[in-house]
Length: 251
Length: 226
Image 1 (cartoon, each protein chain N blue to C red):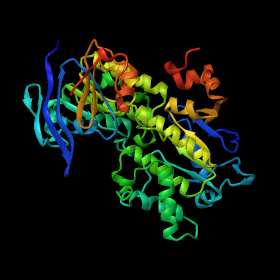
Image 2 (cartoon, chains in turn orange, blue):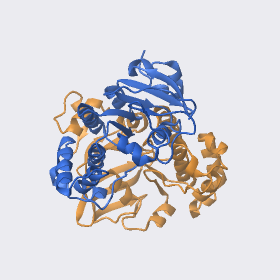
Image 3 (cartoon, chains in turn brown, orange):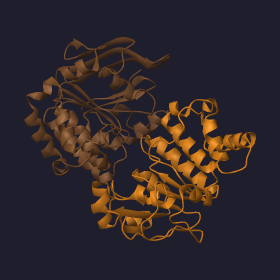
Image 4 (cartoon, helix red, strand yellow):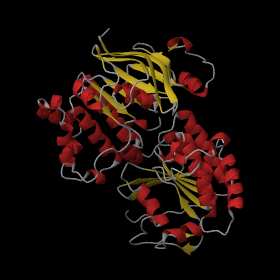
C-alpha cells in the first residue's frame, strides 16, 4: 500500500446556484494510476477543476501531500506539483511546437529538470521532435494531444491530471497514447485520467472511480476487476448482474 | 485530398473512417463548399454538378453538415436554434417554424423541459440531439455528420445510433465520419477508409475492418479478431 498523495473529504462544489459535487470522498496513493469515468455532466471535470484550483470548494477538504490546498490559486497548486492537462485543444495555434515545449517548463519547479524532462517527452513522442518548427494550429489531433501531455510532463508534475486525452482520436493513435501514458506512470508519475472509453481506462488505470450524480458511485481498487457488464448496468441505472462481487458500490 | 472517387446511394448510411489528418473533414468541406470547393474533380448530387457552388446553394440543394465542434448559437434557446434552421432560406412564418422545431426536437428525443434553455449550457448529449434536429430542420436529402459520437459515453453512443437510424427513416441519406468504432460498425451500410488524402478501402464494414491495409493504417490493436 503506497502513501496517500491526494485526499478529498466531504467535497461539495458547484457553479453559481447549482451544486455539482456532493460529499465526494476519495484517496489517491503516491504511485497510483487513477481512472475516472461516468455519465456526462455528473461532475468528473468539476472534480478535476477543483483539485487544480480552478474552482473553490463550497465545503470539504482537498489535501495534497498532507497540505490543505482547497481554495489555493491554480498557480500555487501548479508550483506544488499538480498539473492539469484540460480537455480539448488548448494550444496556441500560431506558436510552433518548439516554442510551446519551452513554455511547458515555465513553472519554477520545472526549470531545474527542464532538460531531463524535454529528453523524456521527446523519447516518448519522437514525432514532436520532427514537428518542432511546425505551427500548433497545423498539427493533427493525435499530435496536438501528444504536445498537450508533453507540456504537462515538462511542468515536472508530482500528480498529472489528464481530462479525456483521447477525445476525437483514431483507434491506433489512441493505443499509442495509452502506451505513452502507461510509460509515463511507469516512470513514477502518479496519474488521474478521465476517459469515456472504459476499455482504454481499464488498460491503463489500477484504480477506478465512477462519478455519478456528483458522488463517487463506484470504486474499483487494485486487484479488483471491472466487467463491462457492470459498467453498462451502472450507466443504464439497472441493477448489477454477474460480477457484482468484483466491485464495491459506494452509498 | 488526392483523386478521391466514390458514390453514395439514396437511403444509405455511408461511414467514413481514417487516421486523424487523413482528409475526412476536408472531404466534408469540399462537398459542402465550407470554406471552399475542390481544386479539381467533380461532385454530382442527384445528377447535378454542385462542385464549386457557394455553400448556401449547396445547402439549399439538400447537402447539409454538422461540425466536430459545437456550431450552435450559444445564447439562443434550443427551440430558437431549430427555428432558425427551419426558417433558413424558406418562406415560413415563426409559428410554422416553431411547430416544425418542436416536432423535430420530439423526433430526436430532446427533453421538453430544456427547450427554452440557452443552447450553450446544454448537456453534451442534448447538444447532439439539437445538432441533428437543426440539421433536419433545413430539409436535407444528404446529411453529413462529423464525429457526432465524440465525448459520448457508451450508452449515449447506443442512443445516438438509434437517432441516426431515425434520421435515415425520415428519408435522409447520411454520411458519417467517426472514430467511435461501435457506432460506425452498427449503423454503416458501407464504409470508406481514407489515409493521407486517398481512399484505401471501401466496402462492407466487417470486411473493410479486416483488411490488413486498414488494420495497419488505422485500427492497430483494435482490429476485430479474425
